[in-house]
Image 1 (cartoon, helix red, strand yellow):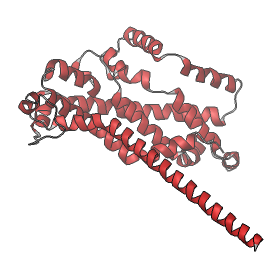
Image 2: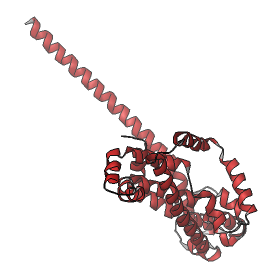
Image 3: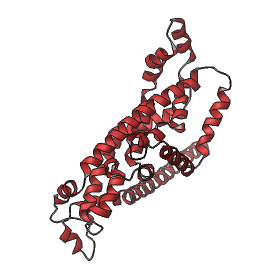
Image 4: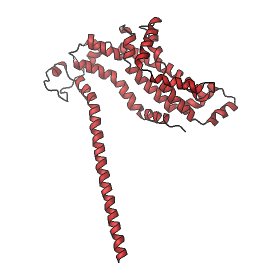
Length: 298
């Protein structure tokens, strides 16, 4: 009886401990989700305020002594005014040309550079790659100054060539892609060489298809980077014919709607931001998968 009673007490005690752990885990989970929801609201509120303001009329916005978090009645006149009064179509075209050309040239550069560092054997490769990575330690401001002096001396200000040329490579993307190339088994490379395939053919037929998630990720990130570019385009162009959307929105603010027509300004910002938001929502899983794969070797 004593042993049976002890076993029963132990089972009761173990059950109580499990219940206490389960309750503590539930409380912790609730607190975690509550914190995440709160932080999500903090992060998303500026976007919500931008969208709500863009569908308020000019008179309604100016008559709000206390800001309202809703728009009654909503109006889309601000969007029509944004396209009519501002040169948004031109800014979109310039940004599209800049983004497509820069991304295409960058992919060609980083793929060839990453392949050279990952698969080719030449004297001083490791030292050269270490020096190459050290460029990431240089402040961007110093690079911008150097690029500005170079582009100006070549007479390429206010040209798409001057906009694109300094941004067609990235040390980080080369490093990320090199890690992916090195994760592909060496046996595939040797087998391809035995079959008579050249390095370039092996790159196109084997490495690029196998590392396509990372390439898609790099492409999307570069598109976002080009679309958001502000400092370099603002520095190298003062001709409105070459303004990108980031520079164009500043021009609209200064010489278009003026600082007082906030709803129309917000409508222009929504139009400019919408493509990137859609792009990220559609490809968010590929971005996360590509970055995660780039950080895992083997």
